[in-house]
Length: 422
Image (tube, helix red, strand yellow):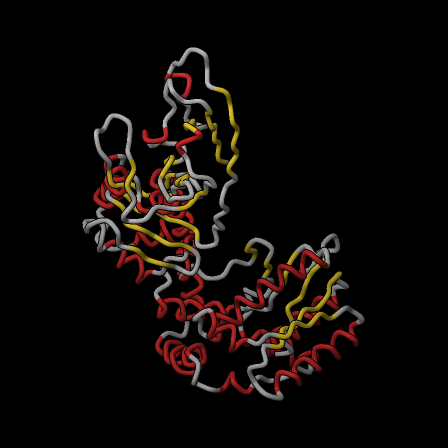
Protein backbone atom coordinates (compact mmCIF):
# COMPACT_ATOMS: atom_id res chain seq x y z
CA UNK A 1 0.00 0.00 0.00
CA UNK A 2 2.83 2.41 0.75
CA UNK A 3 5.63 3.11 -1.72
CA UNK A 4 9.14 3.98 -0.49
CA UNK A 5 9.54 7.04 -2.75
CA UNK A 6 6.64 8.88 -1.08
CA UNK A 7 6.12 10.49 2.30
CA UNK A 8 2.65 10.20 3.83
CA UNK A 9 0.48 12.13 6.29
CA UNK A 10 -1.70 9.58 8.08
CA UNK A 11 -5.02 10.81 9.51
CA UNK A 12 -5.34 8.80 12.74
CA UNK A 13 -8.35 9.17 15.03
CA UNK A 14 -7.42 6.25 17.29
CA UNK A 15 -10.35 4.10 16.15
CA UNK A 16 -9.88 0.63 14.75
CA UNK A 17 -9.84 1.70 11.07
CA UNK A 18 -7.06 4.27 11.44
CA UNK A 19 -5.11 2.00 13.81
CA UNK A 20 -5.11 -0.67 11.09
CA UNK A 21 -3.92 1.92 8.57
CA UNK A 22 -1.08 3.01 10.86
CA UNK A 23 -0.08 -0.61 11.56
CA UNK A 24 0.17 -1.36 7.84
CA UNK A 25 2.29 1.76 7.26
CA UNK A 26 4.61 0.78 10.10
CA UNK A 27 4.83 -2.85 8.92
CA UNK A 28 5.72 -1.71 5.40
CA UNK A 29 8.35 0.71 6.79
CA UNK A 30 6.62 3.64 5.12
CA UNK A 31 7.83 7.20 5.56
CA UNK A 32 4.99 8.92 7.43
CA UNK A 33 3.83 11.28 10.13
CA UNK A 34 0.56 11.20 12.06
CA UNK A 35 -2.13 13.88 12.16
CA UNK A 36 -4.90 13.85 14.78
CA UNK A 37 -7.89 16.18 15.19
CA UNK A 38 -9.36 16.93 18.60
CA UNK A 39 -12.81 18.29 17.81
CA UNK A 40 -13.78 18.73 21.50
CA UNK A 41 -17.24 17.27 20.91
CA UNK A 42 -17.14 14.49 23.50
CA UNK A 43 -15.96 15.73 26.91
CA UNK A 44 -13.21 13.48 28.22
CA UNK A 45 -13.26 11.04 25.30
CA UNK A 46 -11.63 13.45 22.85
CA UNK A 47 -8.71 14.02 25.20
CA UNK A 48 -8.47 10.26 25.77
CA UNK A 49 -8.31 9.70 22.00
CA UNK A 50 -5.61 12.35 21.62
CA UNK A 51 -3.50 10.78 24.36
CA UNK A 52 -3.87 7.35 22.75
CA UNK A 53 -2.76 8.63 19.32
CA UNK A 54 0.23 10.44 20.82
CA UNK A 55 1.23 7.21 22.57
CA UNK A 56 0.79 5.23 19.35
CA UNK A 57 3.02 7.67 17.47
CA UNK A 58 5.63 7.42 20.21
CA UNK A 59 5.65 3.63 20.00
CA UNK A 60 6.07 3.82 16.22
CA UNK A 61 8.76 6.46 16.46
CA UNK A 62 7.03 8.97 14.19
CA UNK A 63 6.02 12.59 14.63
CA UNK A 64 2.48 13.34 15.79
CA UNK A 65 0.68 16.61 15.04
CA UNK A 66 -2.56 17.51 16.82
CA UNK A 67 -5.07 20.25 15.95
CA UNK A 68 -7.54 21.58 18.52
CA UNK A 69 -10.91 22.69 17.08
CA UNK A 70 -13.93 24.41 18.58
CA UNK A 71 -16.12 22.49 16.17
CA UNK A 72 -19.50 23.43 17.63
CA UNK A 73 -18.79 27.17 17.40
CA UNK A 74 -17.46 26.81 13.87
CA UNK A 75 -20.58 24.89 12.81
CA UNK A 76 -22.86 27.54 14.30
CA UNK A 77 -20.91 30.42 12.78
CA UNK A 78 -20.93 28.91 9.27
CA UNK A 79 -24.43 27.35 9.49
CA UNK A 80 -23.13 23.82 9.00
CA UNK A 81 -23.99 20.54 10.63
CA UNK A 82 -21.41 19.37 13.15
CA UNK A 83 -20.37 16.57 10.80
CA UNK A 84 -19.90 18.97 7.87
CA UNK A 85 -17.98 21.41 10.06
CA UNK A 86 -15.64 18.68 11.31
CA UNK A 87 -15.01 17.49 7.76
CA UNK A 88 -14.18 20.99 6.52
CA UNK A 89 -11.89 21.72 9.45
CA UNK A 90 -9.91 18.51 9.24
CA UNK A 91 -9.34 18.47 5.46
CA UNK A 92 -8.25 22.11 5.37
CA UNK A 93 -5.81 21.44 8.20
CA UNK A 94 -4.59 18.17 6.65
CA UNK A 95 -3.68 19.98 3.43
CA UNK A 96 -1.86 22.76 5.27
CA UNK A 97 0.07 20.22 7.34
CA UNK A 98 0.82 18.06 4.30
CA UNK A 99 2.55 21.00 2.65
CA UNK A 100 4.37 22.03 5.81
CA UNK A 101 5.71 18.52 6.38
CA UNK A 102 6.57 17.97 2.73
CA UNK A 103 4.30 14.94 2.44
CA UNK A 104 3.08 13.65 -0.90
CA UNK A 105 -0.33 12.42 0.25
CA UNK A 106 -2.87 12.66 3.03
CA UNK A 107 -3.96 9.09 3.81
CA UNK A 108 -7.30 8.26 5.40
CA UNK A 109 -8.70 4.93 6.59
CA UNK A 110 -12.04 5.01 4.76
CA UNK A 111 -13.19 1.53 3.75
CA UNK A 112 -15.96 -0.02 1.66
CA UNK A 113 -18.65 0.22 4.33
CA UNK A 114 -17.86 3.93 4.80
CA UNK A 115 -18.27 4.37 1.06
CA UNK A 116 -21.69 2.72 0.99
CA UNK A 117 -22.85 4.70 4.03
CA UNK A 118 -21.74 7.92 2.35
CA UNK A 119 -23.74 7.00 -0.76
CA UNK A 120 -26.96 6.83 1.24
CA UNK A 121 -26.04 9.87 3.30
CA UNK A 122 -25.61 11.90 0.11
CA UNK A 123 -28.75 10.40 -1.40
CA UNK A 124 -30.75 11.72 1.55
CA UNK A 125 -29.02 15.12 1.36
CA UNK A 126 -29.71 15.46 -2.34
CA UNK A 127 -26.13 16.15 -3.42
CA UNK A 128 -26.51 15.10 -7.06
CA UNK A 129 -24.58 12.54 -9.07
CA UNK A 130 -21.18 13.59 -7.69
CA UNK A 131 -22.26 12.42 -4.24
CA UNK A 132 -23.44 9.04 -5.52
CA UNK A 133 -20.35 7.88 -7.39
CA UNK A 134 -18.60 6.89 -4.19
CA UNK A 135 -15.20 7.92 -2.91
CA UNK A 136 -12.12 7.75 -5.09
CA UNK A 137 -9.04 5.90 -3.91
CA UNK A 138 -7.00 8.87 -5.07
CA UNK A 139 -8.70 12.25 -5.02
CA UNK A 140 -6.14 14.98 -5.58
CA UNK A 141 -3.70 14.58 -2.69
CA UNK A 142 -6.03 12.41 -0.57
CA UNK A 143 -5.31 8.68 -0.70
CA UNK A 144 -7.70 5.96 0.59
CA UNK A 145 -5.84 2.63 0.32
CA UNK A 146 -8.39 0.67 2.41
CA UNK A 147 -11.36 1.48 0.18
CA UNK A 148 -11.62 -2.11 -1.10
CA UNK A 149 -11.65 -3.48 2.45
CA UNK A 150 -14.92 -4.26 4.23
CA UNK A 151 -15.56 -3.65 7.91
CA UNK A 152 -15.23 -7.41 8.38
CA UNK A 153 -11.76 -7.27 6.80
CA UNK A 154 -10.79 -4.49 9.22
CA UNK A 155 -12.05 -6.50 12.20
CA UNK A 156 -10.20 -9.61 11.04
CA UNK A 157 -6.95 -7.63 10.77
CA UNK A 158 -7.42 -6.20 14.27
CA UNK A 159 -7.99 -9.69 15.67
CA UNK A 160 -5.04 -11.17 13.81
CA UNK A 161 -2.54 -8.65 15.16
CA UNK A 162 -4.29 -8.02 18.49
CA UNK A 163 -4.29 -4.28 17.89
CA UNK A 164 -5.37 -1.85 20.58
CA UNK A 165 -7.68 1.03 19.68
CA UNK A 166 -10.17 3.43 21.26
CA UNK A 167 -13.90 3.09 20.74
CA UNK A 168 -16.00 6.16 19.96
CA UNK A 169 -19.15 5.68 22.04
CA UNK A 170 -21.18 7.81 19.60
CA UNK A 171 -20.65 5.18 16.89
CA UNK A 172 -23.35 3.07 18.56
CA UNK A 173 -25.84 5.91 18.89
CA UNK A 174 -28.60 6.21 16.30
CA UNK A 175 -28.91 9.91 17.07
CA UNK A 176 -26.73 10.62 14.04
CA UNK A 177 -27.94 9.99 10.50
CA UNK A 178 -24.82 8.07 9.45
CA UNK A 179 -25.32 5.69 12.37
CA UNK A 180 -28.98 5.27 11.45
CA UNK A 181 -27.83 4.18 8.02
CA UNK A 182 -25.13 1.92 9.48
CA UNK A 183 -27.18 0.21 12.19
CA UNK A 184 -30.72 0.28 10.78
CA UNK A 185 -30.90 0.73 6.99
CA UNK A 186 -27.92 -1.32 5.77
CA UNK A 187 -28.62 -4.44 7.89
CA UNK A 188 -32.14 -4.50 6.45
CA UNK A 189 -30.87 -4.17 2.86
CA UNK A 190 -28.25 -6.89 3.43
CA UNK A 191 -30.96 -9.16 4.74
CA UNK A 192 -33.01 -8.52 1.61
CA UNK A 193 -30.02 -9.12 -0.70
CA UNK A 194 -27.01 -11.16 0.51
CA UNK A 195 -24.90 -9.72 -2.34
CA UNK A 196 -25.94 -6.14 -1.51
CA UNK A 197 -22.39 -4.83 -0.87
CA UNK A 198 -21.01 -6.18 -4.15
CA UNK A 199 -23.98 -4.80 -6.07
CA UNK A 200 -23.56 -1.39 -4.43
CA UNK A 201 -19.87 -1.28 -5.33
CA UNK A 202 -20.70 -2.07 -8.97
CA UNK A 203 -23.39 0.60 -8.96
CA UNK A 204 -20.99 3.22 -7.62
CA UNK A 205 -18.29 2.29 -10.13
CA UNK A 206 -20.87 2.67 -12.90
CA UNK A 207 -22.02 6.03 -11.52
CA UNK A 208 -18.40 7.13 -11.31
CA UNK A 209 -18.01 6.55 -15.07
CA UNK A 210 -21.31 8.28 -15.78
CA UNK A 211 -20.25 11.23 -13.66
CA UNK A 212 -17.03 11.66 -15.65
CA UNK A 213 -19.01 11.89 -18.90
CA UNK A 214 -21.54 14.18 -17.21
CA UNK A 215 -18.90 16.54 -15.85
CA UNK A 216 -17.22 16.74 -19.26
CA UNK A 217 -20.51 17.99 -20.74
CA UNK A 218 -21.11 20.36 -17.81
CA UNK A 219 -17.59 21.76 -18.19
CA UNK A 220 -18.20 22.48 -21.87
CA UNK A 221 -21.51 24.21 -21.10
CA UNK A 222 -19.93 26.24 -18.30
CA UNK A 223 -17.30 27.57 -20.74
CA UNK A 224 -20.04 28.67 -23.14
CA UNK A 225 -22.46 30.10 -20.60
CA UNK A 226 -20.14 31.90 -18.17
CA UNK A 227 -18.61 35.13 -19.44
CA UNK A 228 -16.13 37.27 -17.54
CA UNK A 229 -17.13 40.89 -17.05
CA UNK A 230 -15.06 43.63 -15.41
CA UNK A 231 -14.01 43.71 -11.74
CA UNK A 232 -14.15 39.93 -11.32
CA UNK A 233 -17.87 39.74 -12.13
CA UNK A 234 -19.19 36.80 -14.17
CA UNK A 235 -22.36 36.78 -16.22
CA UNK A 236 -24.73 34.14 -17.59
CA UNK A 237 -26.77 34.90 -20.71
CA UNK A 238 -30.29 33.83 -19.71
CA UNK A 239 -31.49 33.29 -23.29
CA UNK A 240 -28.52 31.05 -24.07
CA UNK A 241 -29.12 29.19 -20.80
CA UNK A 242 -32.76 28.58 -21.79
CA UNK A 243 -31.57 27.33 -25.16
CA UNK A 244 -29.46 24.61 -23.55
CA UNK A 245 -32.28 23.78 -21.15
CA UNK A 246 -34.44 23.08 -24.20
CA UNK A 247 -31.73 21.22 -26.14
CA UNK A 248 -31.17 18.77 -23.28
CA UNK A 249 -34.89 18.71 -22.41
CA UNK A 250 -34.20 19.63 -18.81
CA UNK A 251 -37.24 20.24 -16.63
CA UNK A 252 -35.50 20.98 -13.36
CA UNK A 253 -32.70 23.11 -11.94
CA UNK A 254 -29.94 20.55 -12.61
CA UNK A 255 -28.06 22.68 -15.14
CA UNK A 256 -28.43 25.82 -13.01
CA UNK A 257 -27.07 23.97 -9.98
CA UNK A 258 -24.07 22.52 -11.82
CA UNK A 259 -23.32 25.85 -13.47
CA UNK A 260 -23.37 27.86 -10.24
CA UNK A 261 -22.23 25.22 -7.73
CA UNK A 262 -18.62 26.57 -7.71
CA UNK A 263 -20.04 29.86 -6.43
CA UNK A 264 -21.72 28.40 -3.35
CA UNK A 265 -25.17 27.74 -4.84
CA UNK A 266 -27.09 24.85 -3.23
CA UNK A 267 -29.68 22.68 -5.04
CA UNK A 268 -32.57 24.52 -3.36
CA UNK A 269 -31.11 27.95 -4.16
CA UNK A 270 -30.61 26.94 -7.80
CA UNK A 271 -34.36 26.26 -8.00
CA UNK A 272 -35.06 29.74 -6.60
CA UNK A 273 -32.74 31.32 -9.17
CA UNK A 274 -34.34 29.35 -11.99
CA UNK A 275 -37.77 30.64 -10.95
CA UNK A 276 -36.84 34.32 -11.48
CA UNK A 277 -35.31 34.11 -14.96
CA UNK A 278 -38.43 35.77 -16.41
CA UNK A 279 -38.91 38.19 -13.50
CA UNK A 280 -38.01 41.87 -13.44
CA UNK A 281 -34.42 42.92 -12.82
CA UNK A 282 -33.11 43.32 -9.31
CA UNK A 283 -33.71 39.92 -7.73
CA UNK A 284 -30.68 39.06 -5.61
CA UNK A 285 -29.40 35.87 -4.01
CA UNK A 286 -26.48 35.50 -1.67
CA UNK A 287 -24.31 32.45 -1.11
CA UNK A 288 -21.48 32.16 1.43
CA UNK A 289 -19.07 33.41 -1.24
CA UNK A 290 -21.00 35.33 -3.91
CA UNK A 291 -23.93 37.61 -4.70
CA UNK A 292 -26.04 36.61 -7.72
CA UNK A 293 -28.18 39.31 -9.33
CA UNK A 294 -30.84 38.97 -12.02
CA UNK A 295 -30.19 41.90 -14.35
CA UNK A 296 -32.24 42.15 -17.58
CA UNK A 297 -31.32 39.10 -19.65
CA UNK A 298 -28.31 38.15 -17.53
CA UNK A 299 -27.36 36.67 -14.20
CA UNK A 300 -24.44 38.53 -12.64
CA UNK A 301 -22.16 36.72 -10.18
CA UNK A 302 -19.99 38.87 -7.93
CA UNK A 303 -17.58 37.61 -5.24
CA UNK A 304 -18.32 38.80 -1.71
CA UNK A 305 -14.66 39.11 -0.76
CA UNK A 306 -13.89 41.63 -3.47
CA UNK A 307 -12.33 44.54 -1.62
CA UNK A 308 -13.13 47.83 -3.31
CA UNK A 309 -10.23 50.28 -3.27
CA UNK A 310 -10.95 53.91 -4.01
CA UNK A 311 -8.70 54.91 -6.91
CA UNK A 312 -6.35 57.87 -6.74
CA UNK A 313 -7.13 61.25 -8.31
CA UNK A 314 -4.30 62.89 -10.25
CA UNK A 315 -4.62 66.61 -11.04
CA UNK A 316 -2.53 68.74 -13.37
CA UNK A 317 -3.00 72.43 -14.22
CA UNK A 318 -2.17 73.14 -17.84
CA UNK A 319 -2.19 76.47 -19.68
CA UNK A 320 -4.98 77.30 -22.09
CA UNK A 321 -3.98 76.83 -25.73
CA UNK A 322 -3.50 79.90 -27.90
CA UNK A 323 -5.89 78.44 -30.46
CA UNK A 324 -8.88 76.67 -28.92
CA UNK A 325 -9.93 73.35 -30.44
CA UNK A 326 -12.50 71.41 -28.43
CA UNK A 327 -11.38 68.07 -29.86
CA UNK A 328 -8.06 68.31 -28.03
CA UNK A 329 -9.92 68.03 -24.71
CA UNK A 330 -11.75 64.81 -25.51
CA UNK A 331 -10.10 61.75 -23.99
CA UNK A 332 -11.60 58.64 -22.38
CA UNK A 333 -8.76 58.17 -19.90
CA UNK A 334 -8.70 61.78 -18.67
CA UNK A 335 -11.11 64.67 -18.21
CA UNK A 336 -10.46 68.37 -18.77
CA UNK A 337 -12.23 71.12 -16.84
CA UNK A 338 -12.23 74.87 -16.52
CA UNK A 339 -10.34 75.02 -13.21
CA UNK A 340 -12.03 78.28 -12.17
CA UNK A 341 -15.51 76.74 -12.32
CA UNK A 342 -14.71 73.94 -9.86
CA UNK A 343 -14.87 74.10 -6.06
CA UNK A 344 -11.91 72.21 -4.62
CA UNK A 345 -11.29 69.64 -3.27
CA UNK A 346 -12.55 67.10 -5.76
CA UNK A 347 -13.36 63.58 -4.58
CA UNK A 348 -14.76 60.24 -5.75
CA UNK A 349 -17.99 58.58 -4.68
CA UNK A 350 -20.70 56.24 -5.98
CA UNK A 351 -24.06 57.36 -7.31
CA UNK A 352 -27.20 58.31 -5.39
CA UNK A 353 -30.76 58.00 -6.66
CA UNK A 354 -31.16 61.82 -6.77
CA UNK A 355 -27.96 62.46 -8.77
CA UNK A 356 -28.22 64.65 -11.88
CA UNK A 357 -25.65 65.86 -14.36
CA UNK A 358 -25.61 68.06 -17.46
CA UNK A 359 -24.41 66.01 -20.43
CA UNK A 360 -23.17 67.53 -23.65
CA UNK A 361 -25.82 67.57 -26.35
CA UNK A 362 -28.74 68.18 -23.98
CA UNK A 363 -30.31 71.50 -23.08
CA UNK A 364 -31.03 70.54 -19.50
CA UNK A 365 -30.02 67.98 -16.93
CA UNK A 366 -30.47 64.23 -16.82
CA UNK A 367 -30.98 61.89 -13.93
CA UNK A 368 -27.96 59.65 -13.59
CA UNK A 369 -30.30 56.69 -13.21
CA UNK A 370 -31.73 57.47 -16.69
CA UNK A 371 -28.22 57.70 -18.11
CA UNK A 372 -27.43 54.29 -16.65
CA UNK A 373 -30.62 52.78 -18.08
CA UNK A 374 -30.08 54.28 -21.53
CA UNK A 375 -26.57 52.87 -21.60
CA UNK A 376 -27.66 49.46 -20.29
CA UNK A 377 -25.64 49.51 -17.07
CA UNK A 378 -26.01 46.36 -15.02
CA UNK A 379 -26.99 46.65 -11.37
CA UNK A 380 -23.46 45.79 -10.33
CA UNK A 381 -21.95 48.24 -12.85
CA UNK A 382 -24.14 50.99 -11.36
CA UNK A 383 -22.91 50.23 -7.87
CA UNK A 384 -19.26 50.21 -8.90
CA UNK A 385 -19.24 53.24 -11.22
CA UNK A 386 -17.12 56.07 -9.80
CA UNK A 387 -18.24 59.70 -9.94
CA UNK A 388 -15.86 62.65 -9.69
CA UNK A 389 -17.52 65.44 -7.67
CA UNK A 390 -16.36 68.82 -6.42
CA UNK A 391 -16.65 70.35 -2.93
CA UNK A 392 -20.27 71.29 -3.63
CA UNK A 393 -21.05 67.67 -4.56
CA UNK A 394 -21.64 68.55 -8.20
CA UNK A 395 -20.89 65.74 -10.63
CA UNK A 396 -17.91 66.61 -12.82
CA UNK A 397 -17.29 63.30 -14.51
CA UNK A 398 -18.79 59.85 -14.79
CA UNK A 399 -15.29 58.44 -14.67
CA UNK A 400 -14.22 56.96 -17.96
CA UNK A 401 -17.56 57.81 -19.59
CA UNK A 402 -19.08 61.33 -19.71
CA UNK A 403 -18.20 64.79 -18.38
CA UNK A 404 -20.59 67.49 -17.19
CA UNK A 405 -20.79 70.36 -19.71
CA UNK A 406 -21.06 73.02 -16.96
CA UNK A 407 -17.38 72.63 -16.19
CA UNK A 408 -16.09 72.11 -19.71
CA UNK A 409 -13.18 73.92 -21.26
CA UNK A 410 -14.15 76.81 -23.53
CA UNK A 411 -12.27 79.41 -25.56
CA UNK A 412 -12.56 81.71 -22.54
CA UNK A 413 -10.92 79.32 -20.07
CA UNK A 414 -7.75 80.61 -18.45
CA UNK A 415 -6.70 77.64 -16.35
CA UNK A 416 -7.38 74.10 -17.44
CA UNK A 417 -7.47 71.20 -14.97
CA UNK A 418 -6.55 67.77 -16.32
CA UNK A 419 -7.78 64.92 -14.12
CA UNK A 420 -6.98 61.22 -14.36
CA UNK A 421 -8.28 58.53 -12.02
CA UNK A 422 -6.50 55.27 -11.31
